[in-house]
Image 1 (cartoon, one colour):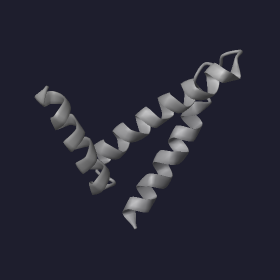
Image 2 (cartoon, one colour):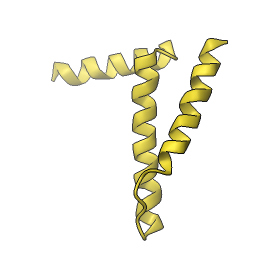
Image 3 (cartoon, one colour):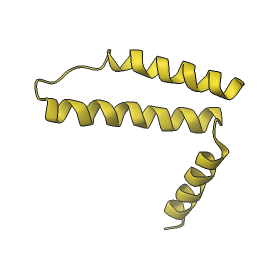
Image 4 (cartoon, helix red, strand yellow):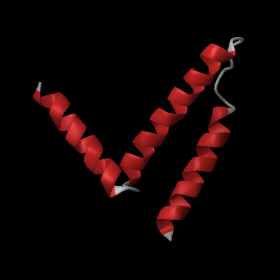
Length: 69
């Protein structure tokens, strides 16, 4: 349904966005750097769009533990 459509659009958008990221000359730095940027944006987007209630619950639980400290 609509959730699958959101995931498809989000994935395609992030794939295209990854080409806009500046490249480094060292693939040992480039791959983790690009992966971290894309994964971070993906997690925030999934949370913001409320695509997965399970992921939102895990993030909320983790944030509450962090903020209690």
